[in-house]
Length: 192
Image (cartoon, rainbow, N blue to C red; front, side, top):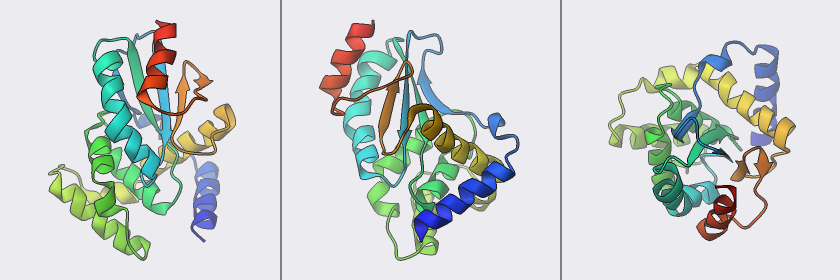
């Protein structure tokens, strides 16, 4: 049922697509970096949370902070809870990753519940713990943010044949190795 609802939302968004380009992608690093990493992810995906907790910090330390890499986090929601969490992550529309990382760090506290209403309540509670100054309800109701998120998902399928999360794209090529820092580092060092 959740997959059907998500497909319906995608179709509706395609039919009414407007101004999604005004929403900024969440990114970090040197905009002029030689290496651009795109991460397609879903906020309810445990492997994505693992990437944010265990792989991303090392990439940030070694490649992003040194100016060698620009990383961009793209939306690929796998269910309605992930779609709503993505809306919250983009709510400030400042391109900052603080809320996104916070949601992944606390995924086990909000990505649970018997229905979407309970999931949204848990999400609100976690967001409030982070003291983010956002209008939670307004963020969830934003058609513009929703269009942006769903267009990321559609583009990922069309351009890169994304079918799982997380999927890493490095300079427009899909990273096919096991997603560990060691494998990413080896691959990135060849591009420097």
